[in-house]
Length: 238
Image (cartoon, rainbow, N blue to C red; front, side, top):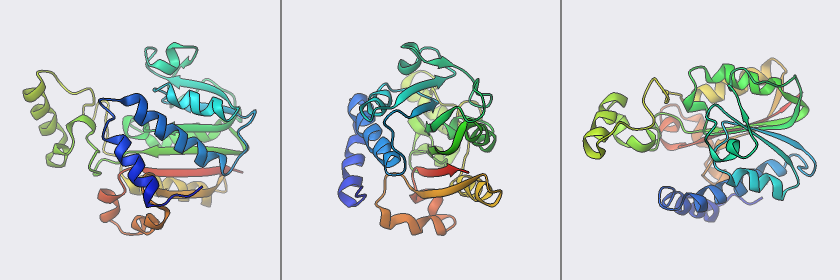
């Protein structure tokens, strides 16, 4: 799979219409994400758990590759769960060890208080030889405050108050309640700990939307927290 500048421009253009045309953005992101997983594992017949599931476009993309897709979310009203998914807690998954060939999590880490513990729990239900895919938006990225961005750079509560004055209601994502200050460093450290403990082999660490040649950004403390935008961590369970 080619991850050059053209792909990045394509994804960023799709991101610009996330609010006005979410089906287009999430469809493009889902196809890109699932194609990346398929580089490392044959998805035809694979059992996939999507933790923090939401947009139905991810279900469609996995089905196109022949996978059996199980969405899980704490919110029973999200599209994927409402149509046959599982309501559950990402920190206490209602599945036995090694139940899935792939556990997929897109933009969940920034919404849980203990992301490393959630990653450990997701890895628990991956079968040996299977994959864990985690991608998340870190706090100091331009989109780290979600709908309050980029004002979150001046403080999460200040950004929320500004949003409320402008829109007449509080934002959906409130700092230290449903949105947390997760860093790129945390993802890198978790992946290294999984490798050192011989629980998993690291297959990919990269800025999710950027070309492959942008990976060295992750070696620069400070800069990586702003420029990475969204970190992808992909490991294979031993």
